[in-house]
Length: 180
Image (cartoon, rainbow, N blue to C red):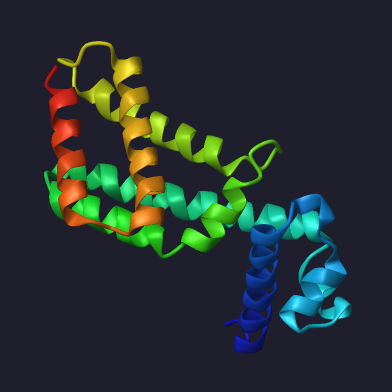
């Protein structure tokens, strides 16, 4: 069992880092900046991370893992026919991670391109889902459109909040695409 103080310290460091990413670019951020914002010492920082790149890598991997798990649940829900509750839960879960996700989305030119990683995960799940449905034409194109709809709806939900009517509209669009 992990000490609650360690968990809290890592949360403070991660929150400080995300806050700084929202204010400035990654290359301008120093370990000292992170420590000042997190109200922790540099030695404490280095107990948990090698450097700011290690912090970024851990945060990136954490978000990718969480997103993959959430997407997997969504597609399992689709397969089981639990459409509406699955869609709402998907966006509700991701909107709670909005500050971290949006901060990491700003790093689109780096090897830590969260937008691209999320889009790839969505595309791969859509394509796997469509490959099980042999009656869908243009599977790769349909997978790309489906992934784009989900990703764009996520971005829209970050700005506007989770709106059940909007999600219902998006679900209707998804159904129409799958029946073409």
